[in-house]
Length: 420
Image 1 (cartoon, one colour):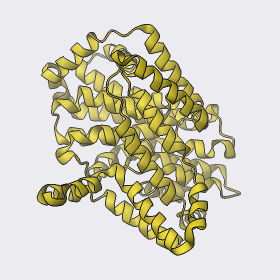
Image 2: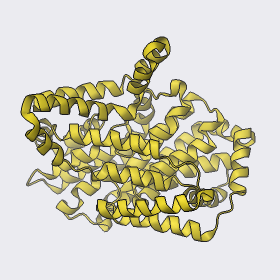
Image 3: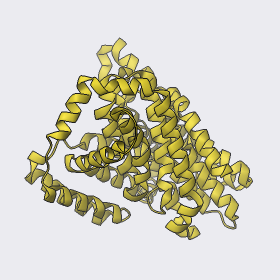
Image 4: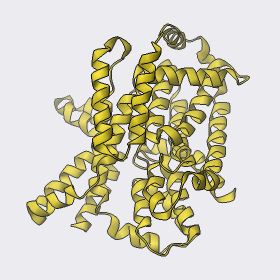
């Protein structure tokens, strides 16, 4: 079953690199366009192949074994990402985030649009260390969508922005011990607290985040500066200026968001807070835009599929990691993260006894470094993809294009963790 599950996992990875192919089929073969559109949704991929694996498991091992395996998987992360996406994407939270971005943007001696772009790609990913990476990804993606992607920017800028965003969010959550999924998986086992993360990882990550953000901003500064006078930018600014929000509704939403973050590992508590939020949103619809329930559910489906498929990969991943030196494990983890969730990778490493401190550092550093190379590399990536994908050609993001865009930011992160 493990070998079969690995073969299905490989097919799922191949499928993520083929979504543009299915999107083209949807246009060239309209008779079954619905099916092709479904298979072109990157958020559907791992959930779909997890269902295939479950059917195969039922046929090979029977009902009891399949139910035991599924019940033994931990689906807290998919549930949490769904909840945090929906709450973080509400108008009161976005209103607060926009104000914070505007304040810091005004401190920079740059054109407004250029300064806002730089702040979104640097400050917001670092906020992920406190509000969690999925929340930071959601906020950054929505802010980028409203201010830049909706303004018909070039495909080159779209891909470059997405690559830097994914890498910066992946490493930007390492200032604390609870916000980045790959860190969370080992923090308790290895006794890593926030002070340790800040001194060993956080400051290095912050330097890499700012270098990546500055590089892409400088590279596309002319195109970004030209957006200042576009109709989309003026409409967005007018909406922000006219969106007066009562203080109490903002405080209530931020309090619920904070509670969900605090109880991120206790589903009964954060689901309860989410139900409270849904009641508030229903009672005061005048302070809400459309809730991103569909996007959140698709991302949760994606991550749940990854949890199901990933649970059968331990048989080859763990021995492979155990056989590597500290230097090899850094680059090995960076590469392996591109084809498997980085949290699953560090979790498997935490099961190995007798690891040196150097090996532990290299494993986690490599896992977060490679977290932007593909959509499956880091749990928050599908959240950003679901929000920004519709702005790309054919409403599909090329896996090769994303990899190429994230490669240089990834190398910057690697240099920060290995040389500083």
